[in-house]
Image (cartoon, rainbow, N blue to C red; front, side, top):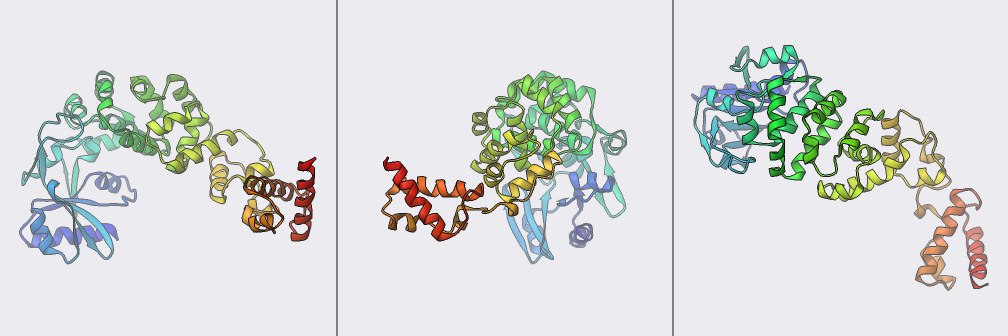
Length: 375
């Protein structure tokens, strides 16, 4: 479906006198027989020319030659063939030149397996990407020192592709990472964290982490000490989505405070703090299951391969299911802090089946609790 729509875009551009190809990771995935998900295209036409050819076009990155063509509700990024100048900050090109050849466009890409172009039955492979796919090898386009000096994040992308594809790291590419690892300091932590999340959910994560440790680049990443990395490599649990990755980090000795330096969201930090201490537990108490959401409990089961009982088996799943609430406590003459304490008291009693979740019973228990507090 997506491939057919992409070929329609290519044909439309060709009929207008332009040239266009599927490029990047989509070509790699198609050659590997994988679902590419998103498909990006590169063209000889400029953004304004592409925009005139299609009814639904979004100007997502005009400065870099990119528009998004929406066809049958599916978005396709279409970018003008471009070359890039020097990377003074080792993150972004100082200038981008549009209107170059396909060869020049492919030459600026990171790895050979991502530097091929495809349309219909024609494959353009200038750097041995197809051979590297067959050899299961991650290798830079041209000189690895140049590629990593242009964008230091590419070093972590190399390990990410190792993990996602189950590939090995080409020797010259690895040696360049060892030499240039300190330049990762130029990269924003958000970008680093995203690559690490993708690495950690890949089936080849152990080999990728082992190679990462071999290069020593973890020494440049906040909190990712050798001990933490070794525990991650030896960890018997696996994250299925990026949201569970940080629980594995914390479980392996990564400091929770470092998650802030890695710019992780409050939700990710909270999930890591909740799940990490539970990973080694063969069974969970009622309180531990109650403290989790259904989604978190399902994630824990998936990560560990265990089958902790559903939260549906608990007497209550949320405080709001109690037969009494704050208004009832206020009617009994309780003040702010007392209300909180009283609700927590009956909540725990109901959760552990010491109290029935019935209004009269709970109100009577609160009055007894109030008398005991006086004495």
